[in-house]
Length: 317
Image (tube, rainbow, N blue to C red; front, side):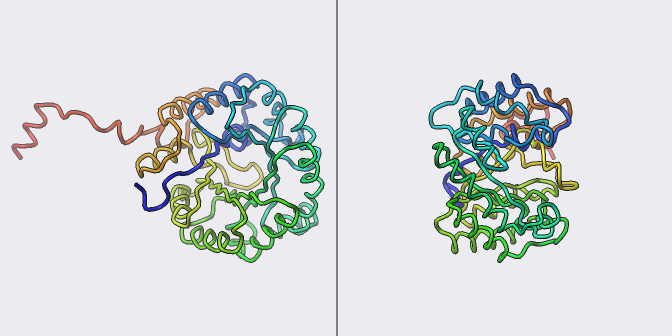
């Protein structure tokens, strides 16, 4: 049994965050195949896509059709990213029951792009929250770059707390801390998680780490040490943020599930099935994966019988 937590919940974000940064436009048929396989593997939460404007995000233009064609299994949460109240309308029309809003924790980034502070942006989400409530659709929020950005290095924890409070004021109490820039490090993650959980006990937290600099797995462990149990990951380590320079590479679902299995932490996910999905993603995208497990295989595959002749030679040494 782990000294960290006994069980974690993993959201597969590959169909959205994994594919949105790819040059390949994945067909509706392939997305439906992957999502149904993900659920069959035991993944309890899937981020199917986003309802962003198709001109701005052509990789996600078929999200509405994907929702109409997937087999939504009872007990599984299927969610999508939205930009505004219009996204709620699209969600309601295609059978999506959970949506997520996003704001940047970077004040410089938000002011430069939207001429608003992050808190002002979140306050503007009230229309979407009200629309979701009227439509019977659950809604959550995300804070991207809460640990640091390319423009301000580290983001003060006070800023992240202020944005969180703005979300709560709009009626959202499920929030993701998303290290889009891939700059978070374990001690920082642990300290932020402890502080955020202490100050906002009413919030259900998700953690979303990119493996841009190889620290995603270590950051997940640090978050677990702080008691956090909900994590996003992407099949085959696909994707990243197309708007942040160099921020490619989500943490691989296969790597996360493998680590949890090794640590005795329950996920409910079949690793072998996720490995098969990761290989299929590689075929569809036609490029190498950043997943360590897809390259090296699980540690259990190393356990094999030593050849007799080699065993005798070793014993003679």
